[in-house]
Length: 130
Image 1 (cartoon, rainbow, N blue to C red):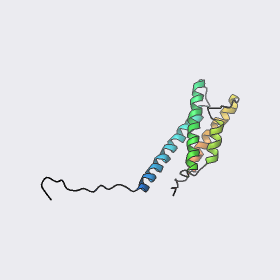
Image 2: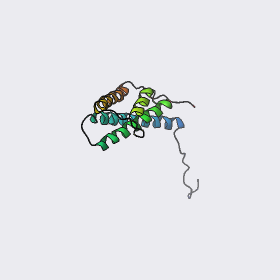
Image 3: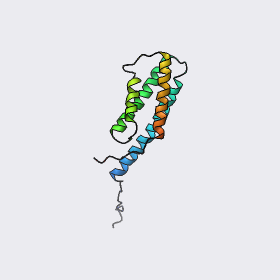
Image 4: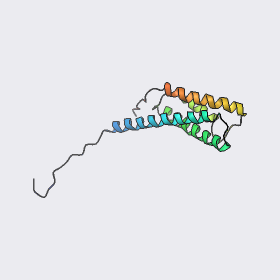
C-alpha cells in the first residue's frame, strides 16, 4: 500500500428483509398509538364539547380505521379489518351520518371499546412474501 492511499473499507448494508421487518414494526407501533388516541377521543366525545371537537374526533377515528383496513389488506396486521371498515364508514367525516345525541354517545363508547379490544387481540404482523 502506498503512503498516499487510504485503506479500503467495506460497507456492509443490511439485507432488504431487515428493512421490511423494521418498517412493519414501526407501522405496528404507530398503529397501536393511533388506536389508543382514537379510543381516547371516542370516549372523550361522550362529554359535552364544541361541535369542532366532534369533527376532530371523526377525523382521528376515520384516519385510524382507514389505516387499520390498509394494514389488514396488506396482511401486516391481521386483526379486525371488518370492524375498522364499519367504524370508518359510520364515523367518516366526508359524508357524515346524523344521529341523535344519545345514539352518538353509544356509538362513541362502542368505537372506543372495539379499538381497545383490537389492541388486546391483535396478532403480531405477518411478513408478506411477494
